[in-house]
Image (tube, rainbow, N blue to C red; front, side):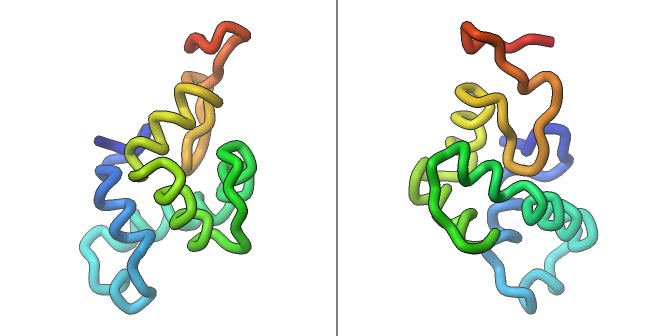
Length: 104
């Protein structure tokens, strides 16, 4: 329900990422969510490549990931469990060993 190491739910992040620039400015928590978007813009190409998604920009990649996984929450779980990759940033706890088990 929450983005790893973030204080916002997946649904809130998803809603913000799908919103227009005008809608984003009106949302509560805009500064925090804007930083998340900046992290996504830095990381989207790695995530898209890992998930096998073709996109030309960060917004398109986000939409394609939703289409691929059915929801961002399911996509986040799949990426972390299979590839040790998170949407916004990967952490050492996301690393996987040869047996696809989490290492800490």
